[in-house]
Image (cartoon, rainbow, N blue to C red; front, side, top):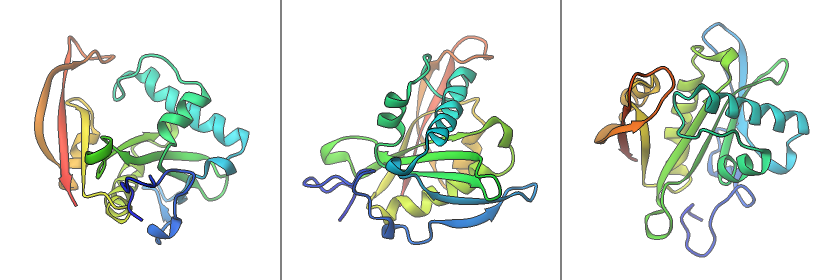
Length: 199
């Protein structure tokens, strides 16, 4: 079953984990910390894990540097937005602390839902430790296994360091949205790139 099957959309509730057989897997952060990447199953999350995920996401929103949102989410809004389709979490193996989290979902509905999008967040305590590349590498492997044919990132702000990672992974800039964002710390308005990749 493909992720864009018009009769049965693959969502967090009916996801077939065998589509991405390498998950879960163990790896290390740059400083040597052992971590494990696994699926996020909404029905199996503890209240502590929910609070942790929501806190990391709202911290990124508050940073005002990489997401367009200005208001914090509650759990219901976060769950509907971030965990509606395939989602993966990177956690420390010793304490289970959340390192990073990302989703893969359709970027458009219906006839264009074979084009996916991803959203990526990393806890402030674990930034610049290689978590983004771990997530990026899995995104590139998992998205086509889930049935997607291409990927489109709609708003990659010019000042976002993650832009270099996506270029390294083969994404192309196909457009520029001039003056797209009012980002914290940037003087004036910041341009954003539209970046795509064909699987």
